[in-house]
Image (cartoon, rainbow over all chains, first blue to last red):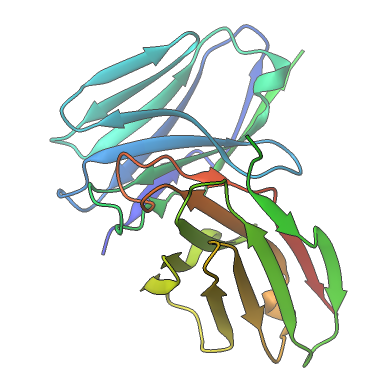
Length: 113
Length: 115
C-alpha cells in the first residue's frame, strides 16, 4: 500500500519568514496530493491540492510543488503569520471515489510574533 | 450550508464499556469516512460508508464497527473499550468518496478518553 512520510514533525519560525513542509510517497500510481490544516480543537481543512499533471500550484501565500520522478511534494508558506500556526497534514490519493487517501503524520507549525 | 456535525464532542468512558459516536454529513454527501487521530499515529483510516454500504475498511480490530443510515448519517461503535482507544475520532464527508477530486470535509471530532 501507499506510505507517506512527512517532515519535519515540528517547525518553528518567526513571523514573516517562510515555512516549508516536505512529504514523500511510495506508490507511483498516486496522482492527487491534498494538504490539510488543523487548528487547535478543530477538524482538518483542505487548504490546497495538486494533481500529478501539474508541477506547482499557488494560492496567495501558499504554494505546493510536486516532483513525480522523486515522488515528493512540498508545501510552501510565505510571509508567515501567527494565524498560520496549526498542524499541517499532507496526503496521497488516487482518482476514484472509493480510493482512501494516505496521510502523513503531520507537522506542527509554530509562528512566533 | 451546515458542515459535518459530530456528537458528542467530548466523552469519558471506562475500560470495558462501549461507545457510540454520531456523524451528520454535509447535505447531499453520500460518503462518510471515519478516522482515528492520536499524537503518535496521526490520522488512521477506520472505514468508509457510501450509500449505506461499507465500501472500505482500515486495519482496526472488529471491536470497531460502523453503519450508515438512509439519510447518510453515520454512527461508529467501539466495544470493550481499551485505554489505547483514547483518541480524537474524526468523521469526514464527501460527495462521492474520499478519492481524488472529491474534497473531504472533516467534522470537529469526538474526543474519547478511556479511563
